[in-house]
Structure formats: structure tokens, C-alpha cells
Length: 215
Image 1 (cartoon, rainbow, N blue to C red):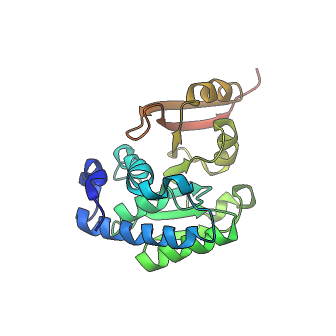
Image 2: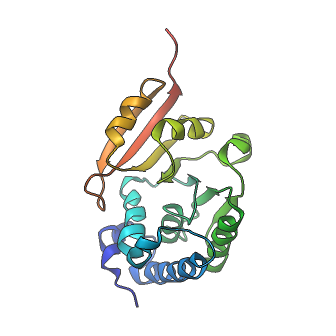
Image 3: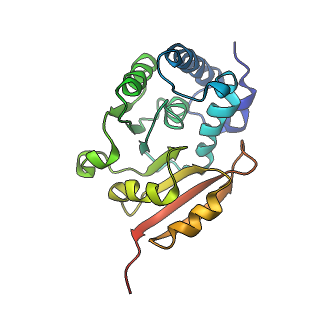
């Protein structure tokens, strides 16, 4: 059995006992290791530290959520982080997750995890710019981890942003420079929360995202 100590700081946000969440995460980790042999889902150097490096890093988003957050959109899902750990932690609460991932093998992996663990997850096997935002549930929260620079993310997220939508983004040591670059083309409100798992990282919560008007 895995050591669930990495989950403890977030257990009060779980919809189920920590043992049940941990068991599903163990199944997810086993699938990650199995599929990693044919498709690079996470960095090979971090696979042995999946609980602290990936699961805890994903689950810290729970602290920033409210009961009203029912619809989630994850862009560039890759191996499913942070969306799948979040879906596992909130399993049974009828929260809907839509994962966007263009790589067909990764799509197959994500659908396999969702099916085997009984998660309320839909996987769109396309790029975000190939999806009509009117055909996906309006998200309360958009998530993204280790995908692209903040200005590029704003371009990808913008079509899906509704008045109530917040984007919660994992960002590393370059977040200050990325924010400075982003404000030249975009208006938004932002709250920066220090990362629990990366001493130089943050979670950026963006709302009211809109293209900067030309004066």
C-alpha cells in the first residue's frame, strides 16, 4: 500500500474517506506506470515520486474551490494532471470534468482511467482551438499544469471563459515574468497562492479574462 501522508493536507476536502481516495489513486498510479512504457505521460525522473510530485501537486487545487464549482475544464491534459486526481478526490459529488488532449494515445489512457475508476470525465481528443466552446459545458474552473506560457494559455482559455469562470493554473519560477508579459495584451484579475509542493511555484487564479482594449 502506498503512503498516503502526501494526501493528508487535502483530506478534509475529499468527498470520500482518504482510504478510498488513496485506493483509486493507487489504481491510477499503476495505470500510469503501465502506459508509461509506450507513451510518455509524465517525466520518467518523477514517476517514482508520483504521490508527492504529481498527486499532491494536483490536489492542492482543492483548497481554492467552492461548493459552487461543479464544471471543470482541463486544457492539455496529457497524463491527466491535475484533473484526474481532482476527479478522484471529488468522486460522488456529481462534478463534471472535461479533459482536452489531442494526442490519441494519451486520449486512450485518459479514457481508460476514467472508465476503470468510474469517474465523471469526458475526454475531447482535439486541440482546444478545434473545439466549439458552445458544445462543451460552461466551466466554473479551468485547470492547466505544465503546458505553455501564460499569454498562450490566455489565448486558449479565452473562448471558454464565462463571467463566473476562474482559471487555476500551476506556474513555476517564471510566473512573475509571465504575468508581466501577459498584462500587455490581456486584462484580468489575478490571485497568486504559493505552491505547497514547489518552493518557487504558485497557483495563479485568473478571472474576468478579456483581451486588452486598444485605447
